[in-house]
Amino acid sequence: MRINRIFLIGPMGAGKTTVGKRLAQELGLPFFDSDRVIEERTGASIPLIFDIEGEAGFRRREAAVIDELTRLERVVLATGGGAVVTPENRDHLRSRGAVVYLEASVDKQLERTRKDKNRPLLQTDDPRARLQALFEQRQPLYREIAHITVSTERGNARTILNGIRRQLQALGDQQS
Image 1 (cartoon, helix red, strand yellow):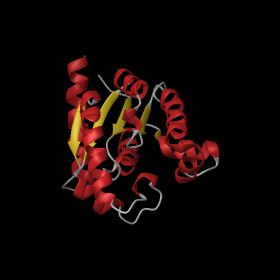
Image 2: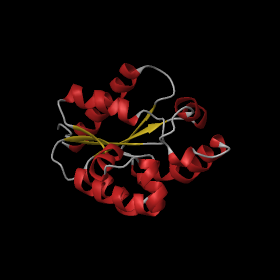
Image 3: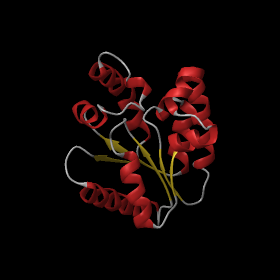
Image 4: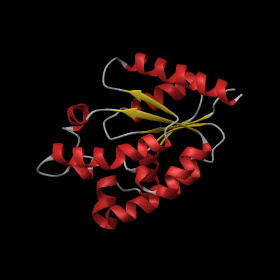
């Protein structure tokens, strides 16, 4: 059985967008990044949406986009790191496709995001402490809905993609 709906979850800096684009290309599926879709539709950056509407306003927009995109017949979807905090997002992701949790340590996240100003939750005096708190809050939620978990700590994109494809194949075989 071929899986045609693949949803990437995980913390910021785990590589969801980078890996998602390459996976979609290899599988011949359309790729969407929920954060980019929100920015395109609002004409505003994620930090600006957070400034104007707060996190709650952003999460409402995110829930609507995830509900819509998880209904597509063929898709690779990279979600924002916090998408899993909304129960309806977890339900939609888990029940509508194969959920791939891209796992990354706090150290790796910090290394990959330290210069990125487009991450409103990291605009703080202590980004490491913020990432640690988010990790502790969200990791159980990622694990709860993941069908597959792949570490993005080591190895290049090719190694990570091979691991995802192998596990997706095994998942598809189980569902046949």
